[in-house]
Length: 229
Image (cartoon, rainbow, N blue to C red; front, side):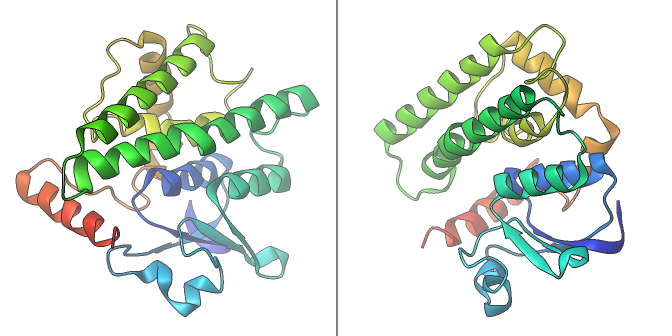
């Protein structure tokens, strides 16, 4: 819901960026998106480093809270959930469930799939041992979610920030050439979330890279490789 801004949202076309876009759209928060070119090192400019000293997206600035800046995608989700109360359970145990799975995504699913992308798609040399290690771990984590999920539910008792955090990473499974074929509950969960109108809007903030052609893929990989230096 881009419009008159209470939140300035700094992002790029990555799963971590889409997490925040999903929450903003689902919660109906007014925000102004700023799209950074990672291959041009927009995230390393002094202006952005003043918002996030770690030089990574996403980040937000809450204009209604004295221009308060928040970085790290998990911290942003928690900040917005606590600020608005939306998609944030009243029960302390349910809040803990959401937080546990958010931390699981931050410490496991994202880093493992991210490293698989690096070694399988971006690294100039193919290192089979590294690729096999991160592919095996990504599938192990898929299995953890598969075992946890019910037939028609969400990660917690209700749809929440844990789902929003995990979804963009699972949704990107084709890029590192993974499959959901052996994970029917995970695939059903993915499809259920993907069908939400707010998620559809969020996944265009910013538009995803076009990798449907060799030219588009080569361009995307070239940009990603420039960030490895």
